[in-house]
Structures are given as structure tokens and as C-alpha cells.
Length: 283
Ligand SMILES: [Zn+2]
Ligand SMILES: [Zn+2]
Image (cartoon, rainbow, N blue to C red):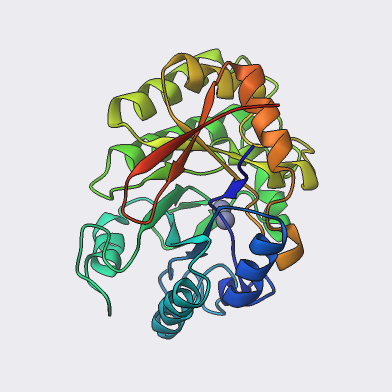
């Protein structure tokens, strides 16, 4: 069946390698019909002083131009100009300011054609922050209860989905497990709440194959959460979250199998025009 990958990064993320063109060429070599570049939207400088987590603001026009150039150069593959946007407490206007205008905007999504939503960190009133999925910050798990982390994550995730940011897809929906913290408590209520929130807002979710290569050793979302999304009628994309060209399209067949096991009959693929198309799952 058709292969697509709607979540990839380049060296502009500050923690990946490869150029936009190398990602696209890897996608073509793997026979993908759609690839989305989804670099991290810049964070405030006090959070990302060294550009480790996201693009610097001055890199945004470079990124946009490189994706537009690739779209022109490789017309036989759909190349989506996307962005991954970190949701944080009180971040709404900071985000809207960045996507509302741009060198190629302003449009509904500013200069972008696809907005991925993610929660990677908690921020505090005193300006401190904790990136719960970042290996050097793993100690933060020792001073918090596991269920407390999930409860706060769920709160932020729900705020993100219900915010004015027009997210297309909520990525790696159960990211807190990444460093090996698979929830040991009963998650049914959490998963049902996430599915209900996504269904109500009409946002898509994503099977993200990168989790299998992290300490948790499992794709996002967990099978039970994916089933909750499917049961609630939430559409789902497939993606590698590649941070290097050789990871583009990685395990997309396994993502299809996970979706089928959860009850999905189709994968949903965002398009450049902001539309969505369905591809029947054939294993
Ligand atoms: Zn992410
Ligand atoms: Zn990502």
C-alpha cells in the first residue's frame, strides 16, 4: 500500500542531522508518496538559549525557502511544509504570533501547511521548566509521582487541543513514557479523556514509530490508547519522527499494522491544501 510519513526533522531542529533536500531524497528513495517536513517552531530564548530543542527565529525563513525549493524541484512527491509546535502553559499568543504571519503568509496556518501539536515540557511560574522526555532531565522523574506527571500532561494536552492554535495532528500522544516510564497505573480514564477531547475538536492523532527506538521500546501511542482513539472515531496519521535522513519512512508498515490491530480501516493523510485523504490499510 501507499507509504507516507508526515513528521520529519532536519539539522535545523538543533538535535537532528540532514538537510531538507536529504530528507526529501530519502523519502523518494523509500517510495513515499507524501512526506511532511515538520521542524520545531522556535521556543522563547530563555527556554532554548542554545537552539537545542527548536529552530532559531532567524532559521525559519531559511527552512521555509528550502521546503518551497524542494516542492518545486520534486513535483512527483507531495512535500508538505509543516511545523511541530510545543504547547506550554500560557503559550497560545506566543504561538499564534509566530504562525499568524510569515514570509509567505498570513493564511490560516501562516506560512505552514500542517501543524503538529506536542507537549514536551512543563513550565513553572518562576520561569523554570522541565522537559520530561529529555534524557539529561530524567532526574525530574524522581521528585514527582508518575501519575502526577501524567495528570499534568493530560491537562496540558487537553488545553493544547482546545486552544486557538489550529493543530492538524497531535503527535506522539503518550510521550511521557519515552524514557522508560510506561504507566503502571490504570490509564483507562486518561485514555478515554484524550480520545474524547480529540474527537470533539476533530484533530488527528499520529502513530509515531520513533518510540520503539527510545528507552520505552514501544511506538506512540500505546495499543490501548490507539484503540481508544479509533473507538472515538479520531483519524490517525503515520510518521517516523525522523531526526536523520536514514530514519525517514522507518517502520511505517509496522504503524499500519498497529492501526489495523486497533481497529482502523484507513490511515488519514493531510494534504498541502489543508485537506485530508484516506488510504485503506492493506497488510
Ligand atoms: Zn516531538
Ligand atoms: Zn518531532
